[in-house]
Each structure stands twice: as C-alpha cells, then as structure tokens.
Image (cartoon, rainbow, N blue to C red; front, side, top):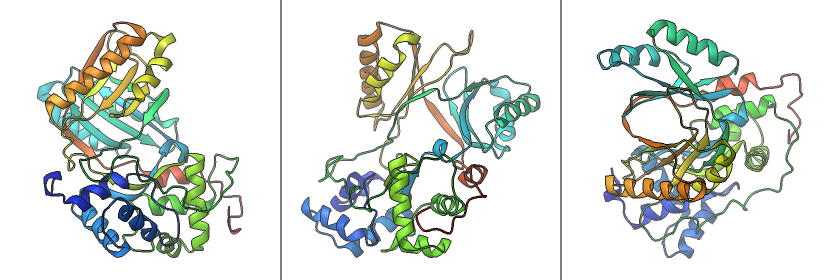
Length: 358
C-alpha cells in the first residue's frame, strides 16, 4: 500500500493524528468527532478499524507513544565509519551482529556506514566501539548529540485536514510533574509495554492497564505526566514515511561557527520540513561538520529544493560555510531502541510503587 492508494479518510487520519491523540479512557470518540468537525464522516469504531488496517499494511510503523529514549535512561549515539567497498557486506554483518546497534544505514559518502548505538549504561559506548574497531580493523567516529534543536518527524500528505488542525492533547487528566529522573518499577513496566505501540482496540489505555496489572486511571495520568515531563514526545500514529511517499531523505551537514550554532540550529529547526536537527561534534581531519539537519521529500527535485532552503537559512545567519549532503542508499538494520534495558537500568527499585499515582 502506498500513498496513491489512500482515500480521503486515510489522508485525514494521517494528517490529524501524528500527535495530539486524546489520553482518555475512550479516546476514539473525541478523535472521530474531531474528524467529523473537519467534514470527514467517521465513527469511533470505523476510526479504530482504519488505524488497525494502516498499521497492518505498514503505513504506520505503530500507533501509540513516541518515546524520548534519552529521557527514559541510557544513551544513544550516532556513529560513522569509512568501509572499503570490497569489505562492505562483511563489515555490515559484523556491525549488525552487535545487539547494541539499533539502526544501520549505507550512505553515499566517504563515510559510508552510519549506525545508532543504544546502551543502558552510557559508559559502555566506548567499549562497544572499541570492540567493533578491533573486529573490523576500521576506525569509528562517534557523533553523540550535543544539542537537540528539533525532532518532530511529521509527514503530512495532501488531504482534507491540514497539519496541526487537530490537537486533542488537552483531553486528558490534570497532572503534576515529578521532580525525579529515575523510574519507579510500575513506570518501567508501562514504558516496556508501550514500546511496540498501543493495543489496536477501542480501549487501549484500559487494555494496557490490564496487561501490567494496574488501574486505568493510573495509566492515563502517567501517560499524561510523561508527556508533560518530555519522556513521551507525543501520542498518535508513527508513520512509515516511505509508505507515505517520502522516498528522498537527505541528511544535510554544516560547519557552523561554534558561537553561531545555537542561533543557526534554531532557525533551521523552525523550517516545517526539517524533522531532525542536532549539534554534534566534529572530528578533525575527517568530519568538519557540527550541525545536522534531516529533510525529506517526495521526489528528488522536492528534496533538493528543501536542501536549498536550509542552505539559504544557514547562510543568512552566519554567511557561507562548508556543507555537504549525505543521502541514504540502503537500510542495513532497523530494530529500534531497546527501551526495556535502558528503562530497567534507570529504575529505582527501592521505591514502593504500589501507591497509585507514582
């Protein structure tokens, strides 16, 4: 199934619910009502069935919470390597054999392998990279996130609901944020239960509560609190952007003067089509760039136009700087971040988690 197969209702769902889905016991009722307010005739039952079909057809990679893994525990880092062409498949097999490697991509650049390392203990990053270097005989270049300017990963399509027109995130319990970084055991259980998405039923929060043996009200309040605390970025559908027609996904990189990187980064992040924007470290003599911005397009021409808009934004704020475009050519591995291990390592087991609301 591709975006060409979507009907008007599918397109409305894609645009309306990439975030801001209600955190209430019967969430499909207000969600369907919001679509009807935009001229899309649908019932709660029909909306649930549509989302289920779109997940099953891999248009949505999942439906549920988008977790900020760094706020749950552990650490993730982007790593680049220059792999000789005649050894590429061999090295891919070696790198992908590490369970700590969550994503791995081939990119059109002299640094042609880029992978994401995810660990529960931040001190293990150096050790895992040292092991990979010993096995492959190749240098790795660690590029951890220093500042995050944007991570929204929203992919609208043409349809009857414009991006941002539906936001039901205010439909949820009133909560007070907790002044602690560590998780309680029951919070850890919730994160692990949610990592693969919501149950595709009319009562997802109640079903989650049943799965972890806790009251539905606690699940609702904890999801809402984690949104307020930034542990969850949003609740909604998580698109497979390739299925939505976003087949061009260049990473743009920029050598921005250090004193300007925050100003430039925030300006680039404000562009509506920039899904990720970070400051990362340089590697002298190998990698001179410190600002990364991902853009996505539905055609080569569209992606190039967006890259040009990023260039204009950067140059307008710090003048012409060295830059490059790095395109993905192949997905080598994509298993996702192992939240269970990272959450477990950040769980304060000494606390009594039996009190509702903790």
